[in-house]
Every structure is written in C-alpha cells, then in structure tokens.
Length: 234
Image 1 (cartoon, helix red, strand yellow):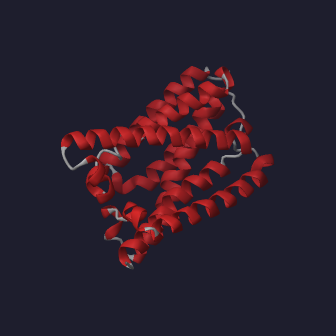
Image 2: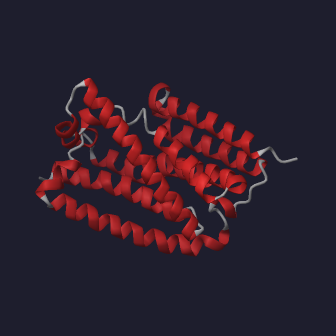
C-alpha cells in the first residue's frame, strides 16, 4: 500500500534537514557520501508514495529532450560568465575567498565531483524531482513549484550565512557587520527560491531532470572555474 503523499513529503523534509546539518556543520568532510546516500533514500520515498519516475523527470522518454535543453543552457551560462568576467563592473562577482586558495586538484574535485554529485544530484533529485513530483501529484504544478522553491530557498540559509564576508562584491553592497550579514542571507535565500522556481519550470517544460541539473551544474561549476581563472590570472 503506497504511503500518503503528505507523509512522504514530511519524510523528505526531515531527511533534507538532517543532510543540511550534516553537510554544513557536523560532517562537511563526508559531503559527497552523505548526499549520495540521501539521494537514494529520497528516491525510495518517491516510489513508496506510488509516484512514477516520469513525474519526477526521471523517465527514459525525456532523456533526449533533457540533454538538448541541458547543452543549450550550459552554453548560455558559459557566455554570460565570460562577459561578466571581462567587464570591470561585474568582474568582482568572481572574487570569492572560498575559491582563491584552490589548487588545480581541488578545482577538478569541485567541478567534477563535489558540485555534480554532492550538490546538483542531491538538490535536483530532492527539489525538482521528489518534492516537486509528490506535491504535484496531489495539488498541481503551482503548489508544487511554490513548495519546492520555498524549501529550496530555506535549504540555503546555513550555506549563505557568511556570503557577505567571503565575497568583496557583496561586502560592498551589504557591509561586513551583523545587520549586513542578515540582509545578505535573506537576499540570497530569496534569490535561491526564485532560482528554484525557474528550475521547476525547466523540469516541467522539458519533462526531464537533466535540464535543471545541467543549468544548476553550469551555474555552480562554471562559476567556480570562472572565479578560479579571474582570481589566479588577473
């Protein structure tokens, strides 16, 4: 007998809360492993509620569309980052202290392992796959987008808490004091919720989780590469 959708959603939220604490506070060294295990648990919860793979963007029939959308989006992000890196007004966006000390080995690990497996896989399966499908199956697209995107924004409260101190661009805008940190975090959370809505719509239009996953990786992975190049080859 399938688990009720609202019970599955509650279980997903509990799992994600635990993962957020583990990855950001208790066991950051196990980030990738924790994310892989959590992804598997979330997929089990999806199927336990009787929701199909297609509804989560994981059906075989949508793979080609997902790849097509994904490749196009990666190119668009790459061009945008190139332009922003070349323009003096936006170049400081990439001066992130979290990237500055990276060596080529860490660069490769971040772009090829941590970001795609530890971040993109978990977050896309969780928010645009499992949560989106569970809520959509009972309440439709609009509510699925609101719930998924809202929780995606809240998911970033902890990792965004120090954004005003690690990037000089944001330090200039919000300041380095406690109030500036709170405002910067709130803005980051709102921006992530909006980004979540865009990613949900990509999943809906393409029918594949590959499209939002590709955009997500491009935003993070190509962003890391661009920051590395701007910082080290200015």
